[in-house]
Length: 203
Image (cartoon, rainbow, N blue to C red; front, side, top):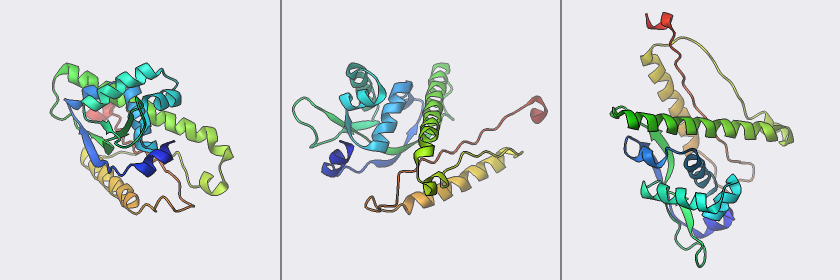
């Protein structure tokens, strides 16, 4: 269904949206984060389609779609559907997070709820990958990884590392092959940089 929808819809999402102290209210719910992720990954969908994919009621997905639309995260998909069936699509390809100017306690709480929802969504993607790993061709099993490294950095070095890794990811993203390339597949890249302060580190 998503492939058919994409074939009829020439909408081009904006590259990025910044999650700030205002629009975070539209994403401070785990189901909305999941729904937006599916729309970005799979293309336009209806409330019924999202409900089926997520094991929710269509009433719940309809409500949360309206909230996502209110805060500008999704837009109607013109030319798709018939009658009362309404299709929705993501308005942006990705999100970034900036709470540097959000001092209000309630906004900070919403921000933390949003980040927890994103973390849970990413953990779900890892679990899904592991679930299907033994069924994948060897070349794709070898092409994925779950790795982590631990070492000491200053805040400045952490920023530098994050910027360089992001630049590499964006370079590969720009060089992505066309959808007609038979040997290509959708690849999710997760980047976490997690400083852990202890009493010794803060002294």
